[in-house]
Amino acid sequence: MRKGSLNSNLKLIIPSDEVPVTRFLTQSGTFKDGDLLVNKDGVRILSQNEDVPPTLIKPSDDQLTLADIDVIKVIGRGNGGIVQLVQHKWTAQFFALKVIQMNIQESIRKQIAQELKINQSAQCPYVVVCYQSFYDNGLISIVLEYMDGGSLADFLKKVKTIPEPYLAAISKQVLMGLFYLHHDKHIIHRDLKPSNLLINHTGEVKITDFGVSTIKESTSGQANTFVGTYNYMSPERISGGVYSYKSDIWSLGLVLLECATGKFPYSSPGEEGWDNFYELMEAIVEQPTPCAPADQFTPEFCSFISACLRKDPKHRQSARELMEHPFISMYEDLNADLAAYFTNAGSPLATF
Ligand code: ATP
Ligand code: MG
Image (tube, rainbow, N blue to C red; front, side, top):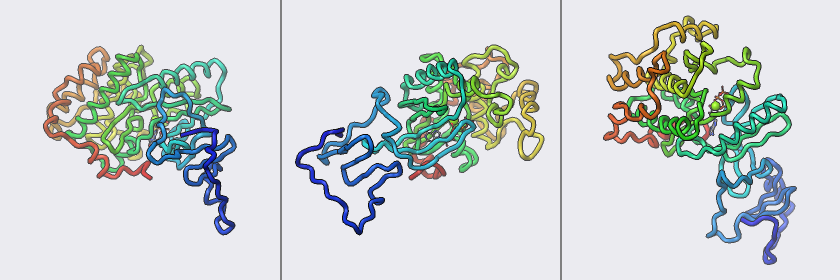
């Protein structure tokens, strides 16, 4: 890839009148013909030699700009904003662009910049890579690694329940991601839920949106942003107590139990779910802890869930301890092929 300089042997052929020029334009208005790209920032030649692939962008490059990417389509929506599939103009790499809208004060903006820096510095195969983040005119844009299977929430809508051998393989990856965040980075995720676990066609499962939840909490009027977001919150957090890494383990337990049974573990009074947010919060604090039904699941799975879902965080196991739990290793001989499982189930999202 070269930027700015034109080879003297290069011939420019203007499209004939019969070919509409729009055929050569990308969505963002870049003129593209073969290897040649022209936009307001200048001319680029992707590669003059077919044998030399463009150098792919790495998170450490710190060179990605919004002008360099084309939006392909919207792939998801959350409470805070939208997620789009985008493609880098010069390298053809795909990314997910998350745009969060917020009106904020200067001091909070600084905090956000700090959080995003943490996000960017995280380098672990079990955590979604953040390539770049921008703050512009009330919008925060985050360029993320694109996970072509979408989220576990999307996947669960398709398959309804996930059998134990696959769940063990998924849990193992999530635990490694959590171990990295907790142990190496000293980060509490705070918003672990099915839509923040992303999957791809190679069978990878990665944690996303750590840090983003802190931003949301510190910037939004809390009362009206509760919708569906705090279902996985631990009892000690709901009660306003001190919370720690173990709070994420509670969320993990609920997520895995939901994946296994196909239902959010706290049964709701109405068909449509909890219509009163405070009732659900009360149930999490007051009701007995949910558990996996012993007649449908192995003792190992039931014990794993119970090790995550202890009301007292001191009695909950850590990510490291859970990695040693028999449930994580009991299906290893089966070699559950997550790549085939994710691909064959035809994840509804984010495919081209
Ligand atoms: P909330 O806003 O309450 O956190 P959420 O996690 O569903 O909810 P987003 O984080 O905006 O909201 O994500 C919305 C959807 O976008 C996800 O469910 C997923 O389908 C998709 N998505 C998010 N990040 C990526 C990514 N890096 N690659 C592919 N798809 C993604
Ligand atoms: Mg999310």
